[in-house]
Length: 223
Image 1 (cartoon, rainbow, N blue to C red):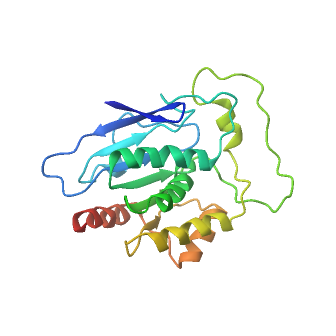
Image 2: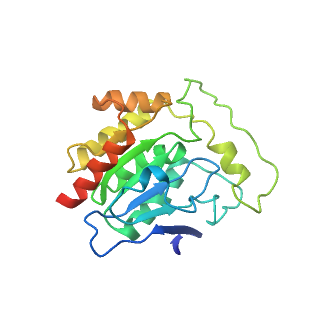
Image 3: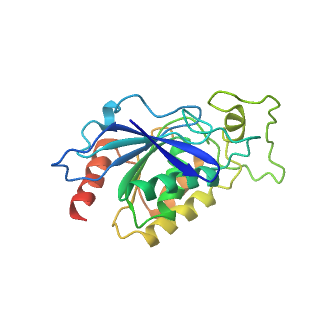
């Protein structure tokens, strides 16, 4: 099932992979895909133990969501996509892959009142962490996309021109804004610089996915 969300002039596709049961003790788990991906057709194996509903969002320019004219993709723009979805869903847990992990970090700080834990996992997109260049190289796309994933998105979001400290700042903002003792879980095997710096800023270690999801589910039950 797809719910269509209005986000400015765009239309975002919010997929229900598994609806909530009457006995659910946990809120929804919202999946955020990596660069060039889209919402999975079913609940991923690693998330099947989640006790609540499982939802997935198509970022703009991906899956069944709208393609912006002329590109101009940034993590900040995708953060607005996620905040729009979270406001529509209500209290939920975020699980992001690659690009989705970086965006989940930002969005959870932006709406910490509704995010009951954020889990960062491996996936494509934003593998860099800024190299200190004053003139970062940005590829140019000339063709107009008519299908997803948008070529502009692939070009704009493949690497991160931000300094790694930007991710650390978002992580610290999340910790300050969230009422959770541990609002952020680093579950990446491949560890881009931004994730290493953010984890170090919080004094956190990288953990397996299963216990991170279990802790997030428990935070829902306690809320």
